[in-house]
Image (cartoon, rainbow, N blue to C red):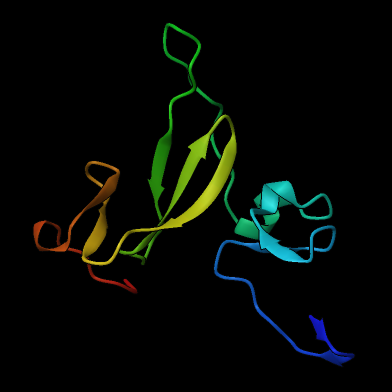
Length: 107
């Protein structure tokens, strides 16, 4: 990023990619020059839909992480973070109160 002619190195938050068209961090699937699957190291399975044609949102755990998970909707992956006080529970594939899940980060 440049301010008053000075360059400053900035990093996007985990799961986001720099979008040169907007000058901001963005979801990798919205950055034309980014291959989101390669960037995230994850590819969503084919989308599934309910009887009304609405796509299901499906979450996936990340090995070794209790806080981050992938959420897929219509073949688009987003790296998401559980809110403070919550951890991702792979048995129900969603974030739950941290006291209700046994998770060992880094294993």
